[in-house]
Length: 307
Length: 247
Image (tube, rainbow over all chains, first blue to last red; front, side):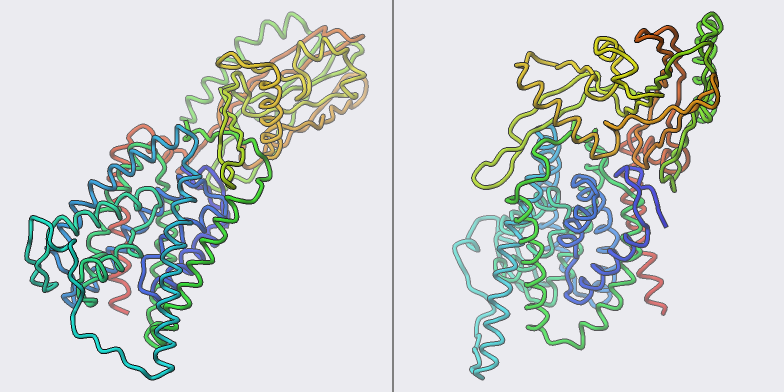
């Protein structure tokens, strides 16, 4: 069934979009991540212009995060105080990001920057995850247990001013730290059309030292507001939010996620992380290859919204 | 919007009527003056038909609305391909097709083909800033290649078929990605290498239906569209969560 996407200005098969949504939704249910970092490159691969892929994906993440955070709130796994501090940073970062996005568009470099941002972040995170998963499997294989006594390491980062108590996360740290993490993730969210969970979750665990139980719920809570901000600003500044595309992806995504969650509980954690790492590296490799490979045509004509 | 489109077409037709009536050597019309791009649009055919007075060849040119085209060239920087140069060409039609009753080379001499921009090699563009002729030629070729790949220009000359000595017709295919705007369909009667009669017929390509409404709204009321987009996404997420909690 061919459907015309009014903002992307292309006709696509609605079933392809629903299928993409379901596929990525399935993976995000399985791995417990948002899936924006997979969806945006996939949309670009099927011919959606990169700026529209980024803008529309932001709207889809708003919806999927709402449905995700409700489940976590029922279990009490959201640290609202931490979420609020992350959010302050996130709003600043994402607003700056949308402005940078508009600037790069007029310079004709937006496609390049979107691809580069993906290659760098996916490459780094995919490698880290793969190493971690291999180590875990290796340790389990040798049977040597690692006895962790401290919840997390304290570094100079935690000694910065404006210390704040976060009872739900059992932390007493500088508020600047989560605000900075929020700002960085917000910037990437705007540029890459992702929620940023795949960067924020490791940062919350390793950098802030938050307990794992509240990490996903809190990041989802913050992502709702940051991606709402991105969706609004992208629509306002760049007119690149295709709501028809977003809703189709959302419908497919929600259905796929249900199946993903069900399969996820039956698989082992380190195997999951290993698989996920390979997938992330695969996407990074494909994007890197496209940047390096000689293009079909060295000349291109700017699209109307590039001007 | 439909009413406005019809009004525009009617006004243009009225304006052109006297010229066609005076000449009487050439009469042509389109099967459709309004091409509606709906949600399921996958391209369409437009038929031009007409009659000539006396001998001669018929050439038909379809041109989309003109605008500036920013053409960018990539070059390799530290191993990756980056846009490093751009030229803005002016007066670029969004769409171009030509059809002729005989090969263009046999119908008209080069200077006539240049003057009437017959064939994509004869399309004339300007530049926004002063550029070297070599640079212009390079970017012009790049533009033509991109437009051809997108199916918006065609180097192939379509056929104008004569049905008997006077009646003729030509068929044009508009692809799924046909740009919107006011097109001109120019019909020329050529005798002994000279254009002896010409007629211009307008054609409107317009988005109709929900897609057009959404596009218009997103550009005209960007802030409200942004807020609505967020609300729709939140509602859809909330709804989905409610549906799956019950089941």
